[in-house]
Length: 330
Ligand code: NCD
Image (tube, rainbow, N blue to C red; front, side):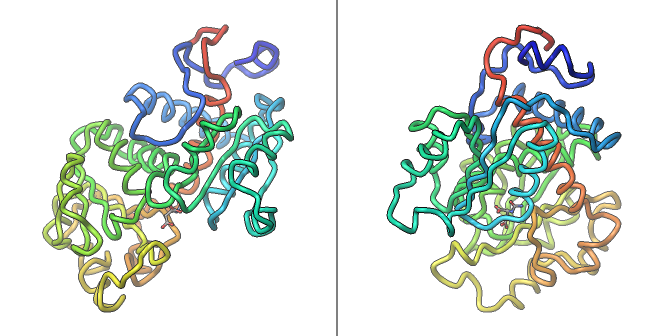
């Protein structure tokens, strides 16, 4: 925390632990349990503060955050913008479609150009896996991965874990199934790393064309039989079919997929009484989830959206303060 900001701010702004030294958030794979727990605890504290008041906290008023999105987004982009503004940062929005990329500028030159405008922190989404990692090696400002193709989407994984922890207290010993297009899902990868580190048993489930048996090598259970999996689960996270990342049709028709894998009223009868129904969104009603389940009492889909702001506030706040914290306070 910079000491000038610390003097002015209310005491309940979560302190940055003195050991925190991460400048970029590129994945959940490389996060330690301690780092994940710190992000979740910090997010819980920011959630408490923002539940009480919509007032802007001026703790990042010296920072400029650029939202650099080369792929479409509703939740992630909006919540990063809201989170940054809530912390007092200035936000610049960059859209690939209206940029000089169309005139032949390279990605690295584009990022360097944005950085030269004194941007401190870049939030990047791109369809190519590894793009945020590449940019982190080529520019000086801090970088947050907001989704790199099918690879990772760390803040989505963290907000999913936060939503489960708020409802269940701990992830330890829970059985959590990720259902749908696992092969093309960055949400799946970021969830798997975070969930496993926190002690959950993870099942990946879907048609064999979308769930490779190789997933077992990450220490998760692979299943193609959704109806067998449902009664064992504490949480179901229903993932969208990523048609935009597929080169061949993974199943004969959407109707057939829904028959085997959509979470619906009938399947809810076989689920545990306290099951949590999650989805990162956007949801396709009638494909991976029916409207009665998406809008039903077990659904925490909108809690996930709200938690997205708290997690992104936490990540921005921590990432903006790498290195020893003169205030101590871990
Ligand atoms: C996800 C994404 O973009 O990876 N959505 C999100 O960020 N909330 C999942 C998806 O697109 O299906």
